[in-house]
Image 1 (tube, rainbow, N blue to C red):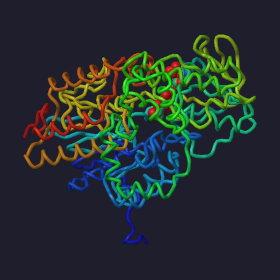
Image 2: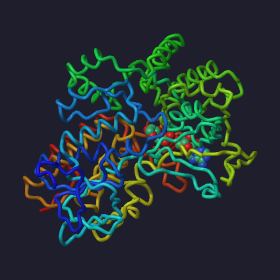
Image 3: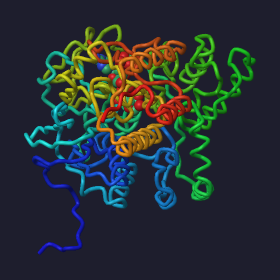
Image 4: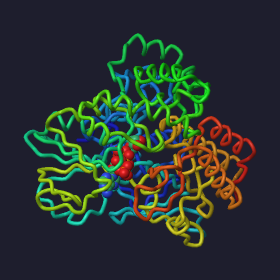
Length: 543
Ligand code: NA7
């Protein structure tokens, strides 16, 4: 017999369900949005394609998967009780711990009863006469909602290059962004890892310790700074909790929305000795604040060169074989592609069982039944790990057939690149919101506070519509055009557009090259607040 007191652990199927809002995705964004909309008394259904909640932290279970923002800042702030009761065990939390945290949040706020797992949304279509969205899932079920909120994540649609013979490989293949739940044992195996972005940098040292032989196929060398991860001192944690609001307030004033201790001085005005001291200090402390040492590092190539050369010198110090050190030394602007943080990455190339292969000049030509073939050589492998990244920021959105007014498809509207107002909404798609969409700080900020800022803004906007008896809201084309131009202008003033990064869509063949994130968290939040305070300026709201 069913216990009458037992809480449902998961929502049942929503065939023909009518909701005030549907949220797509149950990661950090979906959970927090659900909580906010519940506070407004809305009926909500969350659809999640995974068999569990957690989004990014559900899928990315590869060895070494870890956040590059410090735990105390990579967490929700909507509940002081939650902030106070949760204890992080390490400076940088590992995937398992972040997933445990999200599970705890789902239970603590009784979120699961509105979340339907194992349900991939295939389409969302706006019905103009009804003023509602029809959301269809892969299983053919339909739901109808007044508001549709895409909490689909920025790095959730994996990208695997279409190598010839991809399916011919006889052994197992893995993608870091879709890692099996059961432990993978590389003992005694010849393993190939393709890709040296953050996922490669985190997994390579651990795979190297287990595998008989590891071949790392590198197209672009990576700048990575030591994480210096360590158990979090309970005293430090208590001190932060004593004034958590203070930490959050200070972080919100930082360009990336977390405490990077930005230096005010310009690298080009500092002496060589001052620069060296600053970089050494930041290298010793570890983490992403390395790139905030001087105010001009992301704006001036000459300034940037000083930090880049510092890291190259470190690589030469760490890596014993000068030829390998040279191969590992990046030449692009540092932090143009996302800066990585690591535990023993460069050191791993001193191991006798690790071989670095440069596939920039001699690319991978094919995956073969026994391994892979580059232009120069053939490698025999037992397993292949694709650490090849994501169709970032737009991949998950465009993976759903989204149609707005007049049947306009989002894919068609964004054929030349994403166009949004504030990364929150897009003209022609009434009552459709995106959490950390393109055109918002998103991946160039601490994701969790950015997600919360969006969830709060969307909830306030929906409350406003209700108070003013307005049925629909969408950006004006004018406001959207101006915002897209502004996002480009801000990026254009920096060094970010100077390399083939996923911020630009350059990692996916054929993807339009548009710089997608917005640089500058504090100015962005101010703009969003102003828009709301002015009665949703730049949006058209109708009864
Ligand atoms: P990234 O950062 O996009 O890294 C993908 C890596 O895969 C990168 O080194 C790519 O080289 C490489 N790659 C992609 N296609 C190929 C082909 N065809 N041949 C060889 N190498 C290839 O993804 P991650 O998962 O590591 O990290 C994503 C974000 O997650 C990260 O920035 C953090 O924010 C968390 P390339 O640089 O394109 O030459």
